[in-house]
Amino acid sequence: MVEVHTRSVTFYPPARARFLVGDFTDWDRRPIAIDQPLTLEFPAGAYLEYAFLDADQNPFPDPDNPHKAQNPWWTYPRAVELPGFHYTAPHQPSRALEVHRHRLESMAFGTTRRYYVYNPTQPAQATLYVHDGVAYYRTARLAEVAQGLCELGEIRPVRIVFIEPEDRRNEYWFNSTYEQHVLNEIIPAVESHYGSTPERGLMGASLGGLVSGWMALRRPDLFQKVATQSSCLTASPEGGNAFTDPEWLTEQYLASETLPLRFYCETGQIEWLLAPNRRFASMLSDQGYRHAYFERPSGHNWMTWRQGLAPALVYLFGS
Image (cartoon, rainbow, N blue to C red; front, side):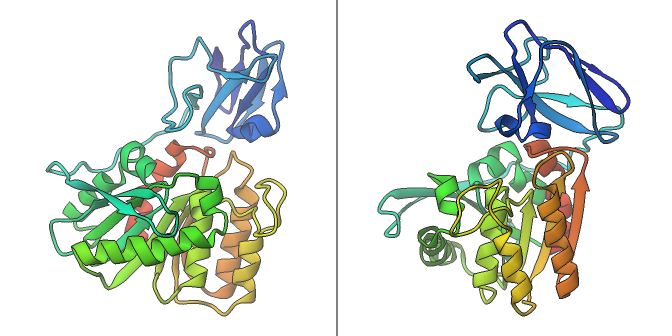
């Protein structure tokens, strides 16, 4: 169980717990040994997710906390909200959305791949290509956020293409095969079926943010807008460790001329990627990029990213 205070949380370990993990430990990267109640301090109004590990390092949920995290990949994280935390749900669209599922025989991968397309009722003025598409579509409900904002007149009509990977770590880690899949297969298929738009953008969280920034750097002739959420900027083509690699992508942007790109970037204050994202935002400022940067008192999770959806769309595609 947990006991929530104004700026801290006391964790009470269940009988078989040996370690505490969460956003604040980089999950299993830096587990905290726990055999008695432990109090940790967090930012005011924080939202955090956590779990326990048993003696064999297997994660399990807090049996006394029924507040499940909105996590599309893991079932064991539980959520805690400190006083002052408030999530304002975005405006709900007035009609049911049509999101079309597509299959594509990929020459790049030699497999059948899938993607989903939300096409606004009005002629789309931009197309946003989103990595980790199913999570953004089903968990974050990005299409509904976009439709609601469009109905309020806060953004222009935006088509959203939800691209689903099969091996996200391998495909998002500076992978030219994935790049060719998007550029030579997904985009032509979408534009052949739905038509082209004057603008294109990229969006993703964690490694999805990394690949968004990388593809925009390589093809600024195709993409004009980029949204990154908790971008995994500790990565390099020659490395392979998201915790110890140099911040290669930031260095590449710093070494290049300023490109005609507009960025929306955000990260949580309770995650290991806070400092790298701060440095990336500072680079954007120093290089003269049009950009917005936000930090939220939360971690590497979908609650953090859901809060940033409407601000990202308004900043990048505001009417």
